[in-house]
Image: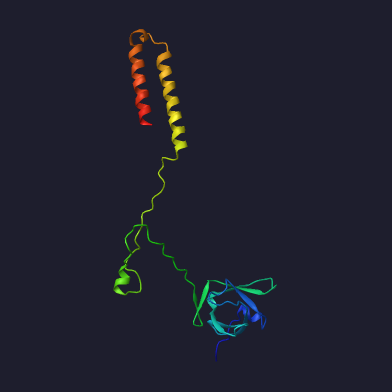
Length: 186
């Protein structure tokens, strides 16, 4: 005696058409009809191409509660049809173009004829903009620094200092020399 099969959510549909979400990759027309079920798979038929595909039950999700314009059957994974077999779809990584004046790429798996790379991909250094900024930013920074320097010099010259009469000229000369050095730096 065989064990009774558990009904799938698709049993409720009968012969009503439905669509998968996400749609199966490599199949253009996404309208299906339930055919039959086994304990592990469900067979569905495409209404346009009449192609029959077995969908593993573990990848079937829930039915939509709204049936306009079609009933939607959720899939737990994005599936891809390859030669009539459904497999989980794997998105491939697109290789970036070679860096300007960079060395040609020679991977170990290309030379050996292997199917997969032997190690991690080479890393290309990416040059970012220098943090110095634009000419306007440099001018603003120089103006702020010059203003701070002027305030510092004014504080030295005009403060109440009992030694001012003796050392005032040498302090002014030192400040003027500092301003000249600062101006040469910019």
